[in-house]
Image 1 (cartoon, one colour):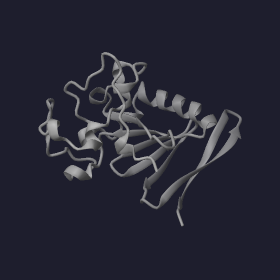
Image 2 (tube, one colour; image 1 turned 30 degrees about the vertical axis):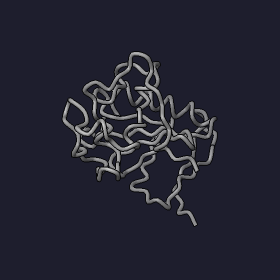
Image 3 (cartoon, one colour; image 1 turned 135 degrees about the vertical axis):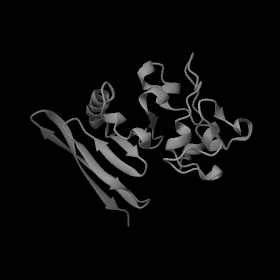
Length: 178
């Protein structure tokens, strides 16, 4: 099984975290006992990580999509957008980790319109756009958003393609893995 913590993505030319540390708030990092939705205790606001030289591999190997994809404009830098974009290395689903202090940031423009366009482009590829605020998940679809709530480790998102007069969409449900 592919271990996402072992994937090392390189930053795009000219991209740097700078003062952005939002990934230090929106992800669980068990190695440093950091919980999603709370600032990691090693983060210095606007400055970075106090244990940068010895940070765990999970942190060392992570770069958000804004860092690795030069086609994403400056509005998508996490400290500006208030969300961190990532691609699941196995499913290739887009994960949008939203700052819980700005829980509706993903619904603002230009972000919401772009998430809808990415959702439409993802359907033919069998992928989805997932928005996470703390532990609560919403699937963004071209025609609607489907709030799934808190998913457990045994829960799986199942999608079934369906054609509508407006184009393709998905029917979404959660099932518990056996």
